[in-house]
Image (tube, rainbow over all chains, first blue to last red; front, side, top):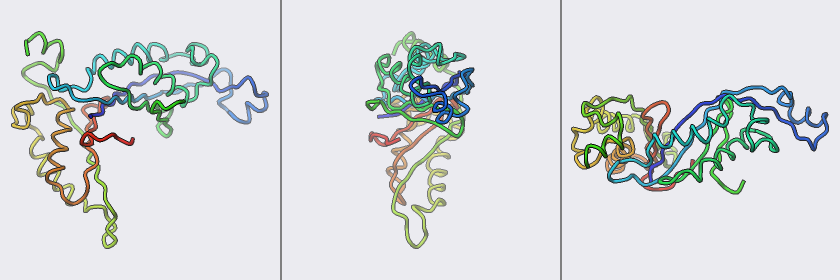
Length: 137
Length: 119
């Protein structure tokens, strides 16, 4: 069992707002992140897959295929997007780093064939990252 | 394997003149903290072992020409496994947990002897 991690970077904007809360509650809980005009982050995504090394190729997974899948499923959908308004998962769910990690897991897991998804790590800033291992969210 | 398969599978990495990487190696060991030294193992021992047994063996070499890769393609997956085996067999000062290698800033690999990783 070898683990392979591939990184990608994308920029996106979001804001935090729960329509079930009052405006005062939203401001109290989410602070500056409640500004409906949004704010941006340069996200760093780390996708870790695990699997046996193919004896012929020496690969756990074809890195080009993994890169293509990450580009198609994640970056095309999220890079330079306003997550709340442009990504279907976040029309009714707050695009916190936690929920972004879960959404990325759900997008990637069904597309990987040879190797299994092990972990999604997403950095919202260099000081803050979230890990998701695919447990029941 | 036929040339077509090699070109298709490895792309630019199939160039027979080879290509280089600045690999970064991380070795994780575990053990009880020795009450006399306050250490899991003396870093001088770990550094010395890695220097003599791994860096001198693989550093600035064409991996394809080394006996380690007579029967395996020197992908970073296989290099991780080989380095783990060398440490596992020779390093006696602490328990080997994991070998992790960065091939580029964007790709890394980890091997824990076939065990599941906790992180």
